[in-house]
Length: 150
Image (cartoon, rainbow, N blue to C red):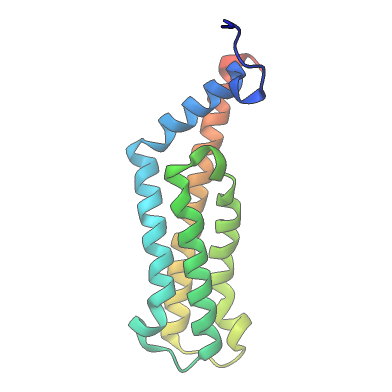
C-alpha cells in the first residue's frame, strides 16, 4: 500500500485551502441572506406580471418570466456551490440591469407606470444583490492575496 498522496490538481494544497475558504464564506449569514434575497427577487420578477397585473404586455411578461427564473437559478447555486458559481454574479448583474430597461426595450412606447416601477425596483434590487455576491468574492480574494503576500 502506497503512502504517497495522489498527484492530481484537486489535491493541491492551494486548491484545498481555497475550497475550504469558499465553504466558510458560503455559510456566513451574509452569504445566506444574499442567496435567499436573490432567489426571492428572481421569483418575484418571474411572477410579477400576474401579481402586479400587466399580463396584457405579453412580450414583457415572457421576458420577466425568463429573466426571473434565470436569475433565481443562477443565484440558487451560489450558496451550495460557492467555489464554482461565484463568477455567475456578473451574469446576474447584467440580468438585473436589463430588467431595469426591459419596459422600454421590449415594449417600446407602450408601457404603464406599474411595469416601469416593478421592473426598475426589482432590477435595482437584483443588481445590488449580485454586486453584494461579487463583493464577497472579491473580499475572499483580497484576504487570500494578503495572506500569500502577492
